[in-house]
Image (cartoon, rainbow, N blue to C red; front, side, top):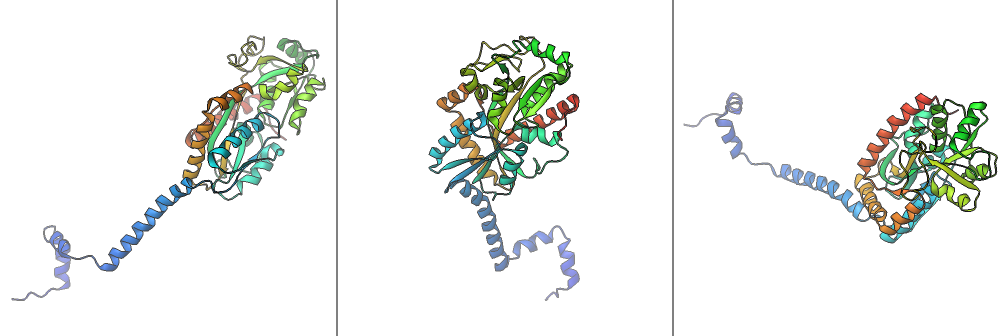
Length: 356
């Protein structure tokens, strides 16, 4: 007897847990569904392998590093060491393009709108990524949405230096002069919000004094102004201070850290020199890329940077310049930026600094 299949019987079979699986098992997948599924899998596979292939083939043309720093100072020296070695790793030219000025805004503006393909990178530091957003009422970039962390290059302690023939022979002399008259003591910095700027502000705050910051666009002037006696003191890295130190025009009174530096063991800490123990000034520099740069490409660059920064001669050259070669993964650099941002936000509020 033939059974007539009705709409109601189909519906009842659909909800019958015993009969429905059997019916589904007997049904065949239409050919067009199979073709569509295979096509979708192919697309997903191509997306997954495309980024990896892009990273594997990177770079196939010259790479440009836009730098927020002027030529001749520690960040510039370090990034050129890195660029030279990367060019040999990659068999492609790696060019460094200094675009200093305007608190890094010029360089950041030039790099953040570049194609997000890894061929334009940006050299910046903690001042740009963790300080500026809290110091200025507004900045023309977003740390979170415009830039992708790649890797740090180095971390560096800072030292307090004065003119060799100037009036300050000790850290206590500077503090005494500042207490004797407001704004009498001046200190030089490369730009508003730089580690030397915050370091000098913290120095004044911790000693209960007032000290006047003087900013210079030319990185060399930051140090020659002190050596010539126009400015009272500065806070800088060994690499930046060394040329005038070797010439006998600058002398270092202390390191702004809680322990002495390995390459300069004879320089006392700030506390040992009679200054505030809590005055710690450190900076880092690193490479970031425009937002949208594939994670695989950023990871490839970071990995190759780690190889370069792990080489003994590179580490020695940087240490001789007063900095410690430090490689990070993109995730580690992102975490560093977040933690530094919290630290500097609190510091800026406590010492009452604000950029005009």
